Image (cartoon, rainbow, N blue to C red; front, side):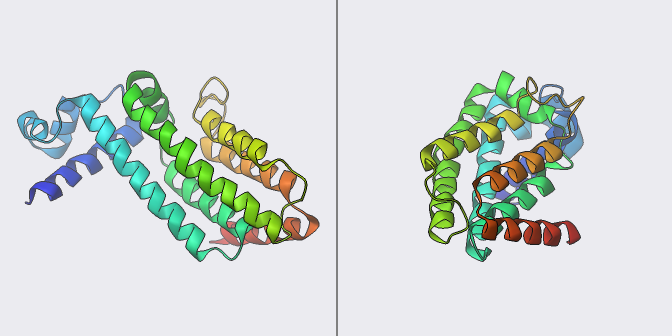
Length: 207
């Protein structure tokens, strides 16, 4: 097996374990056992668990960037784009243990910092462009401060992963994302936009 293929295999297996059990509870021994390989082999590619988490975060963000770009390219309009991205996020989050993100935030600050940087630069830029395009197309209301709205939406995205706001014992993370997005869209759209929200949400639910 090629080195890059083996590294990808380790990252994929690690993601599946983290997704099921969270990050804190999984050790390098667990990962090695799951892969039926020695820890020595894993350490040829990753200095320690923190390095593994950092590289996994880089991989997840790159995948998410590609998915967002695909949604932006295929969407009929800004509302469709938001709902397509929501569907992708819900698909990714549905089988995921929410403690995975909490553990990263608490125990792996460098990895979480990559997420924060990605959110504050890439996601912010795409959302801001989406709002501008929506206003220009008559789908979002005029006269809104788009920088305030973009910042507010970014706070919503961040709080989804914070158990202080949405405890995993009480809330389903995909339900939270859906409700916040629905609330956000209905708050910024015109009557023309409202009709499209209902149309695209219905199509998404039927898929």
